[in-house]
Structure formats: structure tokens, C-alpha cells
Length: 210
Image (tube, rainbow, N blue to C red; front, side, top):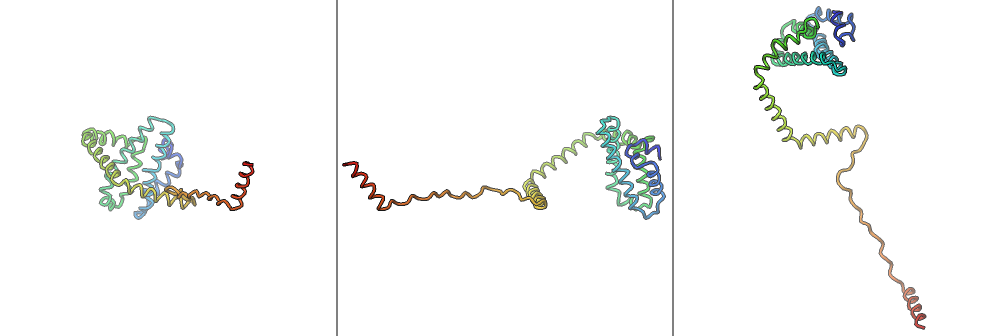
């Protein structure tokens, strides 16, 4: 087990002693410890591969990227089968024990179970039915695009509601929609000329005539 942990970077993070202890406790745990077993299966089957995939991408290691792509293809195929058979096979007493052992077998560097499943089962099946699968995938994507276009108004409404909720939660008020009401610019009317003003104008005109 320590060699397995040292060969996989994500396993090495947990330490060989810890992984050995957890593995023995899970495999030899009481039959009713499904919560522990499910947590272990999720950690081994999803958590550690996610981190290993991240490391392979960041380090630009093409061999590691290919390895984890093959793993995700094998794991995805297993998950599809599990979705339709989970209600039936989960009744078996040692189902989660077997699932945990299977997930470890998929990643074990000395065996590389994921590569065996891909080369011996998955790849020949997909090559044989590639045309039908492509047609099915194109149809599914086409229906998805139709659904999005049909409910585009509802999607925008939900999006605006979410934005308003997030904005109110952050204490920021969204900008007002629409144009603001324009206030009319009312200039004061000129005051009418008074009698004294008119008289002054007449006197000035008479002075000019003289």
C-alpha cells in the first residue's frame, strides 16, 4: 500500500500510514458502516483523481493526462452502469467493499485497471457503435439547444432575479431601469414695464427731439 501511495502524487499527500490504516478499517469495518464506505469511495474514486488530473494539467504531463483521461472514461462507464443497477446491487452486503476495491484497482499503477477496461471493453464497443453514438449525441445536443431557445425568456427572468437577490444581499442597489423623468426647464417670465419706466422713456425721447 505504501508503494501505491508513493507512485500516485495525490495518495502521497495523505501519507502511506494513513492510507493503509483507512484502507484496512474500510475493508474490515462492520457491515453497517455504509457511510464510511461511501465517503471512502467518493474520496478514492473522485477526490484524488480530480487532484491528480489538476496536477497533470498544470505540469503539462501528456502521459499523466492520457492516463487520467482513460481513468475518467472507465469511471464514467462504471457510473452509468451503477445508475441503472444501484437499487439492485446495493442490497448486497459487501457491495461498497467491492466498489472500494474496484476503484483502487482502477488506479493501481502496477495493474492499471482503467487502461485494461478501456482497451479491452470500452474502446472496441465505442468504435463498433461510433456512428450510432455520434447520431445520438448530436440529437441530444440539438434538443438541448431547442430547450434553451424556447425558454430563453424564462432563463433571463431567473437570471435577473438571482442578480437582484445577490445585489440586495451585498447591500448594493441595482441601477434604475428606464429613463429618468425630465423636469421641464421653466424660465421666469419678464416682468411687465411699470408706468414710471414708460414715462422715463417718453422724457428721454423728448430730450432727443429738442
